[in-house]
Image 1: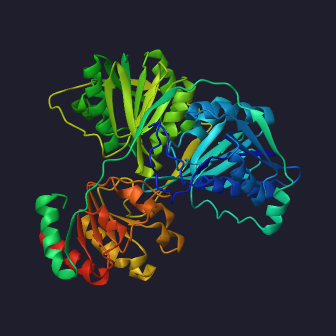
Image 2: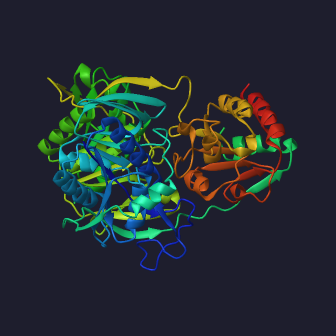
Image 3: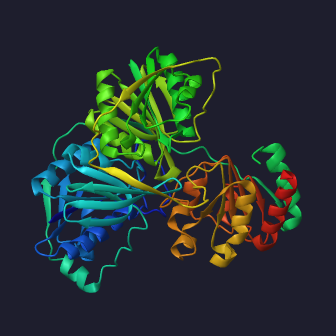
Length: 250
Length: 322
């Protein structure tokens, strides 16, 4: 079984976001990049499934972007993935283009099981996995917190408002992963050393046109600090009065 | 620019969700602004009060009915809605940005080769183009995006657009009995978290952080939440410590929320947490540390001990409600 994990290289969640001079992207100054946190659950799950399938199973990391993405691919290889492919494209792409590039490569590789994080923490779109599945004509289960694959059958739990959906489907499939599915492993020293010898193949990305275009990035309206009503419970009656009469929210 | 708008109605257990009424209202307003037609599509078995969505401005309701459509089936829903959109020449499809919409919208978009813009909080028509605004980095920045494609799919963030009733309107329901839907992927069961309101849908959220000091003290948060009819939320530190489940986590790697009232208790306000909740209409912070960043976004604050403040707050609200 060939298993693909598609990963994004994103600003650390602790990064302060400033708008860049082009007004369309962020200011890169002082921003450190990491593997998209949700993608780590995908890497971990792929490694677990590989252990289960055994034989000549293989975990392949895919990422669309520039040289910088290699850093995240290398980290995934240190966790235990077998090899990486970077689909080189330095121009900004929308989710549809990224999905088309990935679908093209996944098809060529013949992967029947594909993992994505449920969303990337930069553009928060939560659609690339589902788009890729549709382009491949694969099944898809998104926001998965529990997964069991038995032969050709796939059983999963996905998170919804106020509970979980139990979903049944079949291979080939795209799974998008949510926190709770597993605990991503840390790369061991041995893993880090052996990752240095693993191959990251570079390929040009398929040429596709975006279906959406960014016009402008802006800061959210600033919230002004409000009133401190007191330093103990004697301030509670006033708080309740304000919430009831001024804010009218209780 | 836009000729035919199609709104997708979400039902759960045969009940129409509030976010769908918001979508209908918004679609009907956009239709009148752009001089385009609007209709709606609902999939399911029995759907309660389906005709009532007419009061929110849509006179054509297409009900695709089959007992296997009672629960969401990604494969069946995608197929039926995509085919209907093509048949009716729908060039803009509007869906609520719920777990249902987030799963469905991109599939329909890919199926009909449409651009897809998610989680919109505002849009406007400028120079004959639809400009959509959406939060990114969990709200640390905003992005204005336009479509380059002729067909368009967009989702609306719940609780942001108003569901406005226009009394006296009625609708024509067209019933389509579906035979053998594509059930390649289907939901076999829904497990509800008993008695719990989800932070993603709640109008009021009471959240606890490390200042609560341990899972055994969360009853203080739960009691206040229950009194208010609110959902319980948690900071990442609390979830990582295993005190609360990740479904309650608010913030950049949890849920982004916009309730009318957010009460943060013992939460200092890490940048990831602030990103996830600062678009709440009103924020109350209760924290001993007067320099905690949470106070920079709070409308009202008490710089006191939550173990003393919370029981009093629960008591006062009970008094107000009695």
